[in-house]
Amino acid sequence: MTHPSRRLDDEVHQRVRLGILVILHESGRADFTYLRDALELTAGNLSRNLTRLEGAGLISSEKVADGTRPRTWLSITPAGRAALSEEIAALRELIAGVGPRTAPATAPPSARPGLHSATG
Amino acid sequence: MTHPSRRLDDEVHQRVRLGILVILHESGRADFTYLRDALELTAGNLSRNLTRLEGAGLISSEKVADGTRPRTWLSITPAGRAALSEEIAALRELIAGVGPRTAPATAPPSARPGLHSATG
Image 1 (cartoon, rainbow over the protein chains, first blue to last red):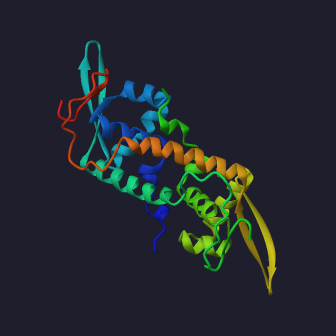
Image 2 (cartoon, each protein chain N blue to C red):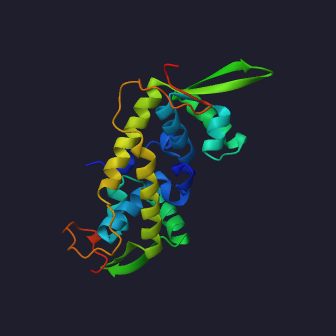
C-alpha cells in the first residue's frame, strides 16, 4: 500500500503555499497585504509563492484600482480546492497513526521485517 | 495570533522527512531498506534526507553487521519525537478549519478587512 507521504505534493505541501491555500480556501479571496501580514512573510517571499501557485493553476489574481495604487486580490481556483483537499486527506491519514502519544511506545511491535520497537 | 503555518518547520515538514519521522515514531526503529521501500524512494534521496535529519539531531543511525554486509538501523531521538509532535499539533490546527467541505463557501464572510467570500 502506498504510504500517505507519497501523496503529498510539494506544490501544495510546502509550508508557505499550504498556508496561502488554507487562508484562501477559508476566505474565498484575500488581498496581498492581508496574506503577507497573516502569514508573517516578506513581500518577496509571498510574491514568489503566489507566482508559483498561480503558475500551477491553483490560485488566480486580480489587480483592482484602489485610490492611488492597485490592490491585488488572490482567489483559490477549483483546481486549488481539489489539490488542497487531496493534501489534507493525505495529511489526516499520515498523522492519524501518530496520535497524542508522548511516552515511548511500550506496545509490542508488529512482526514486519525491518521494523523493531524502540525497546527491542 | 500566529498562523499555524508559521509553526511548521521545514526540517520536519518536508514531505520525505515527515514520512521518515512518522514511520520511526510509530515503529521505534527501522532499517534503511525498509524505509526505502515503504516510502518508495531512491536510496540517494532517502540517504540525503536521513543525513539531514541526523544532522538536526532528530534521528540516530547504527550500522550493524548482518552476514556479509552492514545493515543500517534508524531511530527517532527524543528531540525528533518532540519536533514531530510540534509539527502534528500545528498541522491539526491548520487543517481543523478546512474540514471536508467540497462545495463553494456560501456562509457570509467575516468582516475582516482584506478578506472577502468567493461570492463577494
